Length: 393
Image (cartoon, rainbow, N blue to C red; front, top):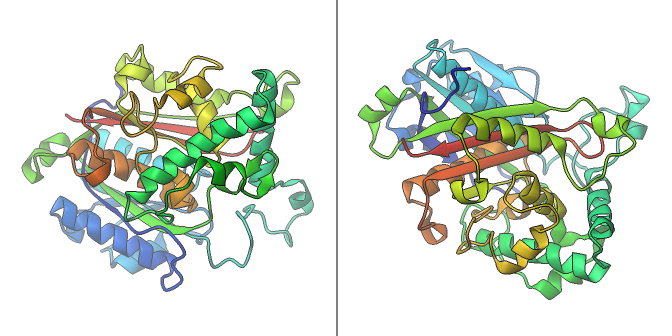
């Protein structure tokens, strides 16, 4: 396998404010993100040869984006892969440049979820179309299974487990408070998290990411072209995607304390880079913290913490801004919410800025390699996981 390492470069990115953006529709968010990316890269619309568009609920084809951006008969491909849609659009755009078919392309993610009239995340299945919806559970109860099982498996009381998850929420809200693009820019206390109303036992209000609107975009080209545009471009080091086949549902011994797709996808990416000790060789990570328990398990699935030692590392501050391996330095889904198509690219945006030294008060001192992890689906069923590793050339 040839691999993707240093074969493509990111030369421009844009990201909107995330939140309850009642005055904008989804295409407004895409346009805002794309034009920030144009300005950042120093390129014009005519330079873009192809586009990959990520969204889950926003329409049928890429034609809507072509119209909004006034693209001149440029191909636009719609990518939908659950919560991995943004990073999968990015992956497809990168592969198109690495293959030599295009010189400069763009990945765009957008989603508008606040105007749907529903309390909570949509299932993606129209109840008037199929009776299957009666089997579609909302996300919080499914991920709550992970929390109750993790507490039991490692002998944690409810109070002990809640404090561990609360520490993760406090960390992410601290980081989000430093980020002008986050939906929630407010510090919270351990006591507030522990005593918050329960959403799905044992997960409380601050353990769950919100529903929001947002957009993000990335411009991808060859390293040779990137050198002519700017000095602080970044390169893609590894890309992987893994789709499960309902193994958790089919196997009676699924333990609910790991997500196999995360393990497999990270191994693929680490193998491409020769990474043996991810805790020390990865300098930061943006992970899919749809719920605090998900982030805790991701630490262990990515090899950042040994099995069952994630809580210990949380209390040591390993994953805080000034810790050994900062995670979700921008505040994560916990403070941005989760507009499906935009989230992955928003996470790449944070790594991009950190690598350039432009992350403001969140800027890390040691920053050469960053990882982005997205998880689509809910346990015990089939998950899709993408891993994107970026770094300096």
